[in-house]
Amino acid sequence: FKMSIPKTSAAVYFKEQSESLDVLTFDPEYATPQIQSPTEVLIKNRYAGINFIEAYFRKGIYPVTELPYVLGREASGTVAAIGSEVKDLSVGDKVAYLSGKTFAQYTLFDTATNHRYLKLDPATTDKELLLYGSALVQGLTALTIIEDSYPVKKGDDILVTAAAGGVGLLLDQLISGIGARVIAVASTADKLELAKKAGASVVINSETEDVVARIKEATGGKGVEASFDGVGKATFEISYESLARKGSLVSFGNASGTVPPLSINRLSPKNLKLVRPQVFGYTATKEEWLYYSSKLVGLLKSGKLKLDITEVFPLKNFKLAAEKLEGRKTTGKLALEIPE
Ligand code: NDP
Image (cartoon, rainbow, N blue to C red; front, side, top):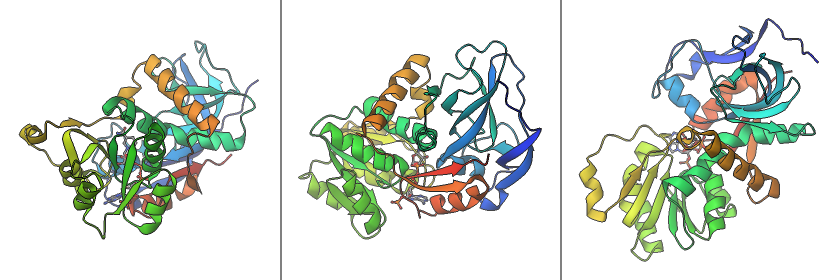
């Protein structure tokens, strides 16, 4: 069957990069993207996950290739139209996927160049669409960095910064599930309580405590085998100081700003490893995508991993969501509901 597709539809974009949130625009009458190549599908979105990366594109920390820049990295929804050469998808299929431009009612997805989608069961409920549309970026980030950037082992001591954030709460669960000890850092008592519930053994308040001293004390002077640090600039030195000999510093984000350049000689006193990964680089092949995404779905389905979706905003309120996220006012995962 065919779905009727309107000429214009809603999208959230900015027309210039800026520190200010005021450039974020909700446009209810943006031109609906049209299928131009036979391998493309047009997806009608239902939910989109919010990620910190949106701030980097807006602020100019990461470059953008076109303006207006429609935001969004992940979503779930229904296939609304397909090109003539699309094999695996049909109109009406429910999907969850990674792609740009998902903060919109419709997103074009090219099956020839993007393998990062999950075909969902026709019986998938609205609640499950919310889950799968919100779990991919942070879930795959957490899974890939603990397996590939530094393979966490039973008995390890592991530092997690922003431990009550989206990625943080997933890391707490996954790392403690392996039998390693999570040393969680966050900025408020409430956030630390959440980290503890998610499996952290030691919790440290970054605003009131000497983080490095507490880590040294908690590890009997040894330090941690690895630090998973998504905060960046503000915590890099803390992560560095906290590492044990032969430790790994996995710097996977810049929530507080970009880590300044450093001399590689700084790694030699403790024979450290430094990794700066991105999730797209760990899911670059279809095999990698299938391996990690099926692992994630399995963990979510079995209930072994919980995604704490703390707030769902209407698409038009993305700016408010961004203000809260960038203002350190949120915990867990934030999502957007896309209007029908
Ligand atoms: P979070 O929910 O973790 O939100 C960011 C958190 O960072 C805040 O809640 C806050 O926690 C902490 N933070 C510390 N300093 C600041 C600051 N100056 N401004 C804002 N926040 C600050 O976000 P996400 O889970 O979406 O992302 C976490 C990190 O992971 C980000 O850096 C993101 O870019 C990165 N990431 C990287 C990926 C990759 O492929 N490399 C993929 C996905 C995410 P607190 O108050 O407790 O310090």
